Length: 182
Ligand code: BEZ
Image (cartoon, rainbow, N blue to C red):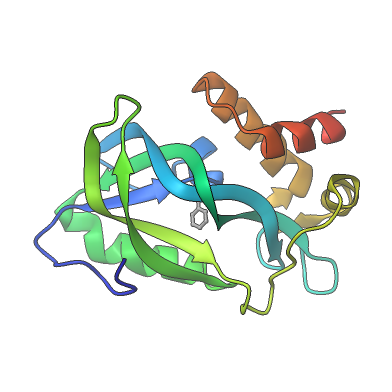
């Protein structure tokens, strides 16, 4: 959909599929399970500012387009009074390579939550992009990475735990968590 902001009067819905799933440190007025069609979650984005450092990047999630795929996460509705602050804070926080896009979200029963949820996606063109690698290599990189937000394995294990609690299936995340489990 549009790469720009949707019409301002609409409520701001944010799709969380990474750290905001297990650490919702934004002001929200509603939090609901959400599905995003056509995307899959992958640990393909390098992190030099949160879960790694320059020269020793960690890996965090992004979304890749996969026909027929569906990414399960959380939709947060942000109160109008917090809208500008949240948008600004997220843009700063995700400046390591994520771009805004707006997408339709549904709930698990198929009902549309919004046609214009804000979704941050790291694209292949960004300087921290790492892309695909054998899962064991991804796990090895994550095992050795630590950044200002904490150890990289913690991110994977916390995300896996939160998805399990939501009864969400995600082979990529769970396989990685199994390799990293202490
Ligand atoms: C999240 O869901 O935590 C998230 C992931 C990528 C960019 C912004 C937020």
